[in-house]
Amino acid sequence: MTQAKAYLNMDLLRFSTAGSVDDGKSTLIGRLLYDSKSIFEDQFETIKKVSERRGEEEVNLALLTDGLKAEREQGITIDVAYRYFATPKRKFIIADTPGHVQYTRNMVTGASTASLAIVLVDARKGMLEQSRRHLFISSLLRIPHVVVCVNKMDLVDYQEDAFENIKQDFREFSAKLQLTDVHFIPISALKGDNVVKRSKHMDWYQGPTLMYLLENVHIAGDHNHIDCRFPVQCVIRPQTDEFHDYRGYAGRIAGGVFKPGDEIMVLPSGFTTTITAIDTFDGAVEEAFCPMSVTIRIDDDLDISRGDMLVRTNNIPKVGQDLDIMICWLSRKKLIPRGKYALKHTTKDVRCIIKEVKYKVNINTLHRMEDAKVIGLNDLARISIRTTQPLFYDTYRRNRVTGSVIIVDEATNETVAAGMII
Image (cartoon, rainbow, N blue to C red; front, side, top):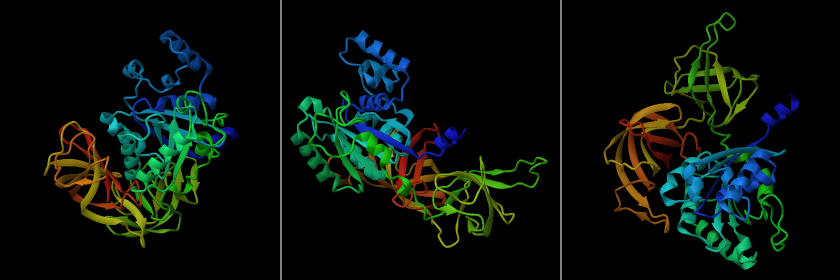
């Protein structure tokens, strides 16, 4: 029981892998799982037999994540594949995202909740268009930590110059972006060099292995613990004999720290009250912080429902209906100027109209194309919208939860765009 509790209380790191086609993303994840002893023996035996049947010289560890039939046949990743594993130090959720340009939307989906992004690059090819695209998206999504893994070092005879040249190219490009913590590691996912175990072939590299970095990167400061934000998801009223008068407001904390006794304000009403208790699945707690899921009880009987937000009286988010947002368009149907869409922000559902397309971003040059008003699949653009009701929001730079929205086609219920409030 103690072991189980210790496991539940371990740090959780969500990270995504991105890179161009055939850079070895799925192989890298397979190597991480295999070398960290996070797969069962029968799983390894299965992929070993499949590899032999195909006539491959080595065990194809990419088969551990490529679950779709089309992925196995083509040797590529199409959809986002999630894998879970743990070491004695930390739990991990990996999002293996596709490399093809047409699957950029899948990369955005997989990276949107990540605290760390691994960008792979082939040591023989260097920085490609997709490398720039993935770095730009990592910057746009405000992913706190980025690790550039120069893969397939075994195919360039483990030469230091090949690694340093690519490292320089990435540094020059990332200098134009808002990336705060970037690491560079030379690896061979196929052979296992510098993935979990240190490479004997690259004694010139003195930095950490990938696994050491994943286990020790500091993630406690990645959440906003200053601005208290609690979007109400639902009202808890058990109405049983045991909890006859119980009324609590359940949701996931989007920022800050809440404690019993704190004075809070309810938006949009503006009424103030005091927190009397904070309940969790394991019982009452003396403080709750992002990203905990809790039920907050208050001192007064106020009209509070889904979509409302609890905040501190002296720290109120922005309130407004006119927003500028940066979007990644996810649909094959093009954006309709002046079109009406549904919009989801935290727990609030509203409708919106696209007022204006301000510009589209050229991924290679990072230039703004102000004349390009047609927005299609995988395009990144800045638009302005107006919502039918005021939203309580922060900029995405300040809070990734209260600063993000998704736009939905009302006719088909398809999510057509992911947006970041500027």
